[in-house]
Length: 118
Image 1 (cartoon, rainbow, N blue to C red):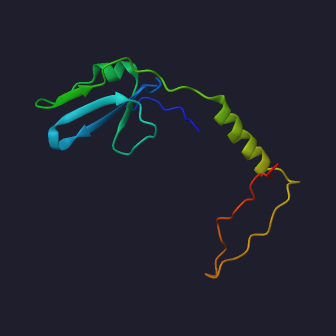
Image 2 (image 1 turned 45 degrees about the horizontal axis):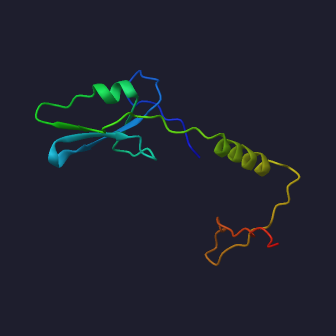
Image 3 (image 1 turned 30 degrees about the horizontal axis):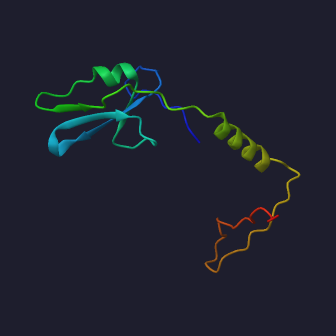
């Protein structure tokens, strides 16, 4: 599912379109297209902050050559998630008993049957 990511700059509420990462060994800041997932040591930036970023003295900024575009928004993912949550919350839904494992604790993963072959 695609989530809405905002700019990491304090006080900025714009949508993120770029990701900033650092290469400390090379004293380089890299601003590229928005990463597919948020990483702990990277920063999401909006268009304004991605273009205005400066680095400390002695550092180099490597910037993506092109226009930063916001990630495509998909209602299909959101709809699928909403339907899955709704299905899981149904009271009349049959619940299968989960067998316990030999370790003495209840297994947390189970195999679901696939769709019937036609």
